[in-house]
Length: 229
Image (cartoon, rainbow, N blue to C red; front, top):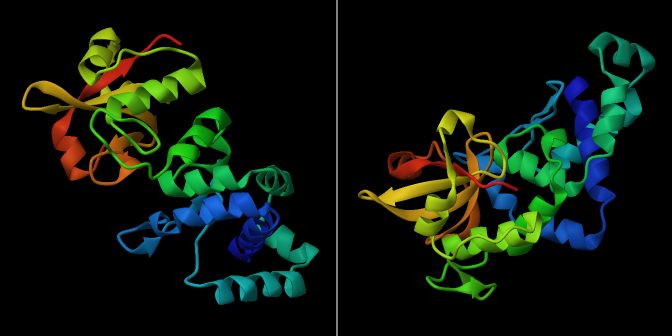
């Protein structure tokens, strides 16, 4: 019953957003899975929504909650109504990227950053490019830092690496740069978001979010770097 209640909250939030936000949210629906299975939706206080397979099941769950949830149900399942109020205030952007990165929804608070990512999502990779027709990795991090943090970065990944204060993987924070190597040379750069996730312009997928724990990036990881902001 507890999960059903929060499923209904999520449905209400998504159905209440405007059409443009819904359109953006639907663009990456295929990424809301891991190994072909829907990911769960996490909240800071440990509440989870475990997605069901289709909209019909969601609607049935919501109808069941509407018809059967009573004060006794709330008391028996220890639902924290203040948490519900907090969750109801979350935006579609928070839900979208919380699910993509398996992060607590309320932890997505840097709206300029995630709006920027959303705006550039799927832009194809183009070596030497710096526009939405195509952009390479260092141009993307440069555009991101300029737009979100009002901070200019050098043009190339190696120059950005040389500018950074070096950070161990265990100490990475949102906004740190992450660098990857080809042999011993810096060959790629992205920006760390949290939970081992980073945003970057990849050669295969363009602007996207990947995991440091992915086999390829784990093998190629060179180090993290922090830019004074």
